[in-house]
Amino acid sequence: MAADNHIRVSDRVKSLIDDRRREGESYSDALERILGDERDLTDGMGFWSDTDAAVEARETHERGKRKTLERTDG
Image (cartoon, rainbow, N blue to C red):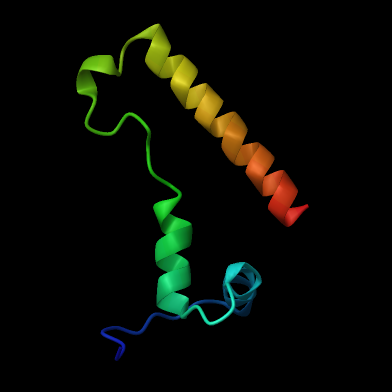
């Protein structure tokens, strides 16, 4: 697939992407996968946003993300 756009990133950012790229994965695919992990569990659930359950879900999600980062970046 031909590139649609070009973006400039620092050497540090490129290195971070390289560290997370899977074998045979393009930069575009890697970024899409990495950025796709940044979704909000409560998106589209406005009726839930002000409840204690939503706060608990967000906190649980954040704890899980931190644990994943500790395991993978550690």
